[in-house]
Image (cartoon, rainbow, N blue to C red; front, side):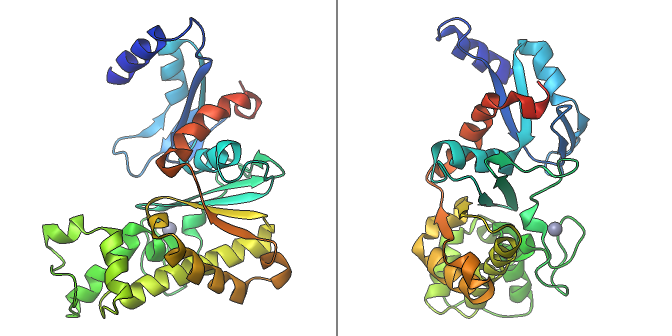
Length: 280
Ligand SMILES: [Zn+2]
C-alpha cells in the first residue's frame, strides 16, 4: 500500500511515461525468468511469491526481479568503481554475505539462477554451522552476524574483553557495532583480536579461490565492513597475494565500491537496460 502510494506520488512529479519500469533486488533464491521469489529465509512467510506478476498487475509496467547482490554488482559495474570492467566479482559484506559475478560484461546466473552465493563457499570443513545448513561457510566467519556469533561463543567460554563491556545476552551486545569490534581488536583486545583477524583472513581465502577460478579484473567489496577502509583492504590483499596464482593476483584490483549503500538500488534500476535477460 505504502509503496504504491510512494510510486504514484513519485510518478506524478515526473514527465508522463518517464518511468520505464521497476527493478527489484531481492534476497534469493529466486527465479529471474519467471519473476518469482522461491524462498527468502529472512522474510518470514515469503515462499513462491510471484512478485513480478503482483507488481505488474499493480503498475502495468516492466518489472525486473534480480538477486540483491547481483543487483549491487551490476550497480557498481554501471555507475561505480567497476565502470568499463567486464570481469568483476562483488562481495556484499553485510549482516550476511552475498555475491555477484559479472563475466564478459554480463551477470552470471548459472543453470537456475543459483550462482554467486559467495557467502556460502566452504572455507573450513570443521567450521561453525551456517544458516544454510552447511558448516564452515565464509558467512559464518566474515559477516557481521558471523563475527558477533563467534564473539558470543567466546564470551560463553569465559573470555573477557578489555575494551568492550557487555555479556553475550546483553542488549548492549546486540547493538554492538562492527566499528567498535574492529577498534577493540586493533587495540589488542583478547576477545575480538583473532576473530577479526580470521574474518579478514577467511575473506581473503574466498577471494583467492574465486580469483583462481574466474581470473577477474576486479573484486569489489560493498557493505558495512567496508567502512574499515585500508584497515580491511591491506591485510586482505596480503592474504589473497599469499594464496592466489601470482599471475592472477598481480593485475587484480581489490577495491571498495563507491556507491555507499546505493549499489543495490541503482543496479536494480539499471537492470531495465537489459530486459532480455529477464525474458521481458
Ligand atoms: Zn552457508
